[in-house]
Length: 438
Image (cartoon, rainbow, N blue to C red):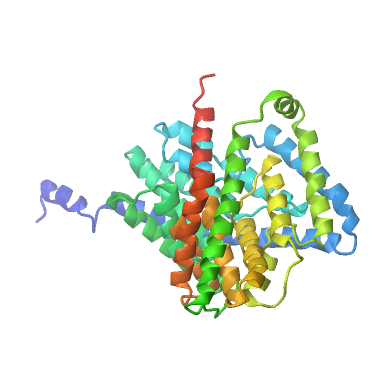
C-alpha cells in the first residue's frame, strides 16, 4: 500500500513526475513547432526571391521602382504596425538573455513582433533587398519557445531563458539543417556559456528540430556538397590571405553597423530622424543600381551565387563581393527587418573566388570555403560557429583544419578593426534603448 507521503515522494521523481513530464512534452512540442515554422519560412523566403527575379529578369529597370517603394513600405510598416521588428533579430534574443524582467522579455519576443519579422523579411526579399532569413528565424523561434515557457509558468527567470536559448539554437539548426552549428551558436553567441541546467534543454530542442527538418525537408546541405581539399604547403598561403582580407572586410562591416546603431550625429542625423522613409527609398535606389550593375547577382540572400561557387558550377561578376557587401550594408542601414547570415556567406564566397587568382597553388573551390569562413568569422567574431556552420553546410570535413585556422586568424584580424563583437554590441545598444526611462 502506498501512503500519501509515499505517493507524494514518487510524484517528485523525475521519471514519473507529472510536472516534469508536462515540461518535457511542452519542450518537445515547441521544438517541433520551431522546426515547422522555420521550414515554412524558408520556403516562403525562397518563393519571395523567385518572384522578384521573375519580374527583374525580363524587366530589370523595374527594380528602380520596386526596390525604393518596397523599402519605404517596409520601414513604414515597421514603425507604424510592427515597432520593434527591425534589424536581424539575433541581438534582441541575446538582449533577452540579460534581462531581469519577464514582462520585458515578453515584449521583445512578442507574437506581434515575430509575425512582423516574418512578413517584413518576406517583403524585403520581394523588393530585392540583400537580407537573409536566418537572423529573423532565430528571433521567431525564441518567441515561440518563450510563449511555451509562459504557458508552463516556469518557476524561475533562468528556466524561461533556457527555453528562449533552446528556441534560438533550434531555429539556427532548422534554418540551415545544421544541428551541431545550432548547439555551438547557442554556446558561443547567444549565451556565451553552457550551464548544466540549460544544456539538456538546448540539446533536446536542437535534436527534435533536426529530426523534424530531416523528415520534412530531407537530408540536404545548405550550400551543396564539395570535396575541395587544401594541400599542405604553398596552398596554405590561401589561409593567411582569406583570413586577413575576410577579417578586415568583416570587421569594417561590423564596425559600420555598430556605429550606425548609435545614430548619426549632426545635420545628417537630424535629417534621417525626420525623413526615415525618404532615406529608405534612397537605400532602395542604391540596391537597384547595384543590382543592375551586377546583372542581378546582388539581390536577395545570395544563396544561389554562393552555392554555385561552392559546387564550382559558375562564377560571379568581377567585384561581386564588393557590390554584395555594399548592397547588404545599405539594406541593413535602411531600417528594414532582415538578417546578415546568408548575405555574409555569399560575400565570403565571392571574396574567396576573387582571391583564388592570386594563389594558383590553392584550388578555387577551397578558396571559396576559406573566404566564406574568413569573412563570416570577421563579421560575427564567433570563430567556432563560423567553422562548424561552413563545414556542415558544405558537408566537407577534409577542410576542417584550414577552415578553423582561417576562422581564428580572421577573428584576431577583425578585433583590430572592430573591438566589440557585432551581435553583442548591438544587443547592448538595444538593452540601453529598451531600459531607458520614459
